[in-house]
Amino acid sequence: MHYDAVMAFHSRRSPVVGRGGMTATSQPLAAAAGLAALRAGGNAADAAVATAAALNVTEPTSTGIGGDCFALFYDAKTRRVTALNGSGRAPQGLTLELLKKQGFGGGLPPYHAHTVTVPGAAAGWHDLVERHGRLALAEVLAPAIRLAEEGYPVAPVTAYYWGRGAEAQLRQAANGDELLIDGRAPRPGEAFRNPGLARALRALAEGGKAAYYQGEIAEAIAAVIREAGGVMSAADLAAHVSTWDEPISVAYRDFRVWECPPNGQGLAALLALNVLEGFDLRGKEALGIERLHLMIEAMRLAFADTRWFVADPATNPAPLADLLAKGYAAERRALINPRRATLDQTRGTPTGSSDTVYLTAVDAEGNACSFINSNYYGFGTGIVPKGWGFTLQNRGYGFSLDAQHPNALAPGKRPYHTIIPALITHEDSGDLFASYGVMGGFMQPQGHMQVAVGLIDDRLDPQAALDRPRFCIDDGTAGGAVALEEGIPVETMSALAQMGHPVRPASGMARTLFGRGQVILRDRETGVLWGGSDPRADGCAMAES
Image 1 (cartoon, rainbow, N blue to C red):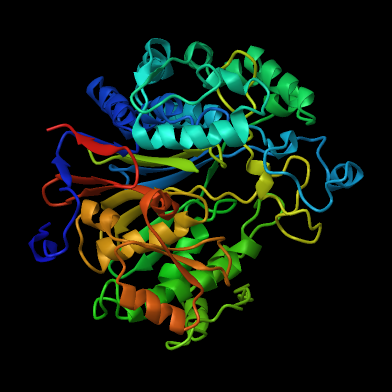
Image 2 (cartoon, rainbow, N blue to C red):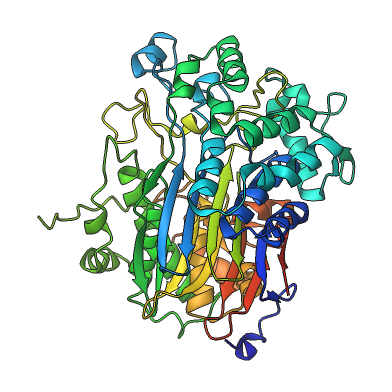
């Protein structure tokens, strides 16, 4: 694997290379925790959970055991990809009728206790290590427990979002002060200890997932939600289970791109790539008008489908085989006007044939784990189970309150999920090519598509692919406005606007809108790993020699 031809693109930093294993995420201390698991004899699954747990400590603004997780695991021996759905469900007592009776028929406030779905991350960590890992969960969680007990200096970007979360959620939420220092967010470089979270992680390490879903932690979760006006019960928590699902994928050029199936929105990335496969992107300037217009339009078509079809497959299964068929992609591709934006694309009718953290880890044997964990809106609801040091997610805000919509709220149902991990394999052999992801709400499938194009069509190294300026359809809808990152030529921005795209430039801290990604590539000839970490965050890739 050689990247000499792409060095004309000026990356902000070089890719990281190594052979003995690699982790990449948005916090260096968390990446180091993953490497510690590899050094202890663990594999990519162990490293991923160690990293995720450390991120709960060092970046609670985005993630934690009060949220959900998804993972894709690549087994180097079998070349098989498995998908873990670690998302939780709505409480049994939460119905559309109840919300209407309480005056919420027009929609829920984003931080209300009713938006808390059962947190699935703790069970997801346990189940991933149990099925694919090699270490005991206690050994995997040890670095995170130490960080929480001893404290750590808060990184600059994290401190910024912690300050925003303090204003928006923590100061108003029950027990939110457990994540503040004298009523404020920690400053950049200021040490923060979280003894409550250390206690929660230690309980999980010693007692497994039962300690979270059937013990004191579950009782504290149910109690604080009741106090805040919600209806989740201890029985809702005790009933939670992760699921192992069949991953979905499409061939793109000489590769196969893998995503988790709905209720995650990975389907959107695959639909967009299927549409783009019919265009010669290599013959078009990377940040030029022709290519960006086609990519934006492909994403609009993908969102038109996924905002309808992505829902809990247990109650509203999507016609995945038909949606991902090449013939359907050709039908959708024909709807793209090469000279004009189409803002009113509608969902297709395939014919039946009968604020979030992302991390990745690859070990020396070539096993890979693409992993994502989220509270949804930063700190989620900001509600903290008393004494336990983590916030509860607001993932239920993703439900539709339209009873006729596939994603309509119902008891025990999983909501539309924005968080998605991804993998890429070689189509001819099934060998691992890349474990990657881009976090950030509806930016995630857009980021997956844009980074995949950089890696596959342009042969960029991982760091250069992540550095490249991006676009983002703000609200994840077919007709949404398009944010364009600083670095995209002004001439391109102007031309897109003239073609009918509602555009707005974004720079500075607003660049986090475009997601924070991580990529690890594996050279199948040499086994050398190439890693990159998004410059829009505080993190890095770290490797063993």
